[in-house]
Length: 224
Image (cartoon, rainbow, N blue to C red):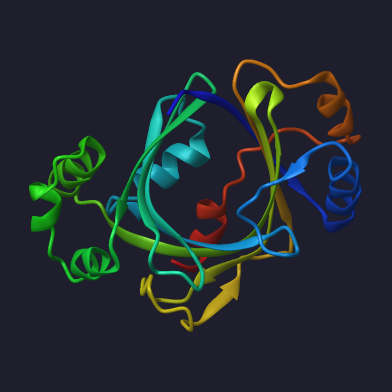
């Protein structure tokens, strides 16, 4: 995946409503959403025993990466392993589709299938498990409302209803207990290639809002 610019903002619900109403007249809905223009996402994040990825995120380390597996809630047929890397403000992502049975094996401690896989991101994941002792840390559930614009390959998303798994990493169980990740907020993410059209820049302006280091993973780690 080509490196992209990525900015995150923490919004209150009123700001979310204002921006959403602006963007729905300027941008297209993501074609993969439901009738409400949304979908529900579950991610399981991996980290080292001493929480290297979490600490680097909080400290704002420039060159950092993290691994997670991701799927849409209610669908276990499409699951991806992702490595997200950030450097000099640019983000890129590598991913590989994996099966539910492979996830079950992984969470059960069986990593042999990773070693047998020829895809680079899967092999690197195996190497990091062995060398850094990456382990499943936190389930993150949320509702995503995405908007897209072809000019600049812009993708703007609102993530709300952020919940964390409670003392469990049972990624495939849709009925697992979750709790709200702190105060109710909405995370705005803005991603684009070389540029973002001026009319979208103007639409995103809100007094007193600045890019922040907030992340869903960090929010949900308050529970372990």
